[in-house]
Length: 129
Image (cartoon, rainbow, N blue to C red):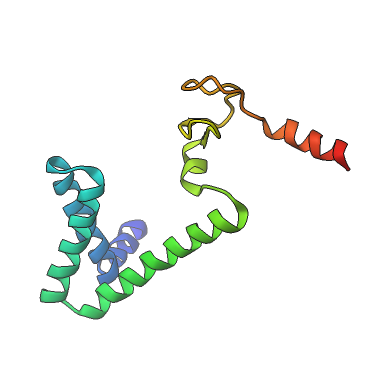
């Protein structure tokens, strides 16, 4: 029962309600539109309706949260040369054809390029030192 009460408290927060509206509009738009277009339609639509009918500061705070997450992902990508989205999907990019392949693949199934494994790269670096 305590979990339910905590969930109800969380859902009653305006910023959570804003993101729920974005999610619902995204699901509806995904039925009719492409995924990328659906994202923008749902984001702009939820922001417009929220600003028109609710507190505009909530929408601003929500977009600051989105911008913060986006900034962290970009910093990880450029500072550590790590694609967080591919890492979470268990994938990596082929250096020849740039297609997504399984993280542990030794040969790209698209262009048949032999992929360098991480262990081989570490061994090569140790030999060079």
